[in-house]
Image (cartoon, rainbow, N blue to C red; front, side, top):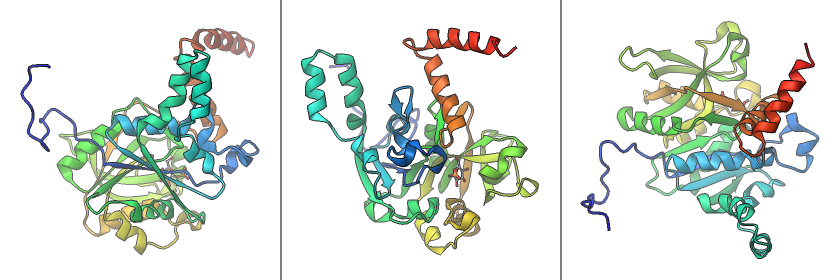
Length: 312
Ligand code: G1P
């Protein structure tokens, strides 16, 4: 046994970052129309980034930030998304009996990460509506949730941990922001922020607007699909009306929390963010991940170099 004094139960040392909330919500009810025809039968969240579905990468991110439960919001006909997190004992037995240990480890990864539950969003009424669907699944003492949009890959990990630290310091809700060029800003939820010269990477949010016209965007800081939301967000979600695109927008509920005087902050993400929600972004993510792999990286790099040279 290591000779370290036991820490009192329920106390964390100052150096240990607070974990994100117990439940990580992953909205995965969309139709994936930008990926048709593939998404006619395959949910877009299961499309592989090299060999691993995007939703498994997001589950790994949630687990490493300290979440213990993954709550997937899904829609009728998308059972495969949840099935990916269920053990397949027949497949595992087959792989084990053939001595395929590396493949066995890959197959066992998703079911071993977190406790997984699902809730059905039966009508496509928007991201705000999807998040509102989980309220009844939470225990009374869960005072916040994490929300991870599976379209967004936010790399390297660690941003969720910094968001949890910001919530521990300021309370309320904390979101992840990325800088986006002006001509792309109207695809996002956009923040109106107040600078804190002492803390350039955490900003207080004064307001938030979903998919503004570029000339009306309050900044170039956009929501990047990672949220730690105080439980009061459910009151706000009940109070909002359909917004951009005629949908119930999570952004509008967050804007309402701010109007109610609740603290909302953003942590600026430093690193890469991939948008798996469209084929172009998905391809970049797959190439980026593959280039870093020992098994596919060297050959892909050599081929890409030759292929790109042909363009000149
Ligand atoms: C959603 C959110 C938006 C956010 C974006 C990040 O939009 O509504 O606020 O900036 O995700 O990817 P969507 O891409 O689903 O239209």
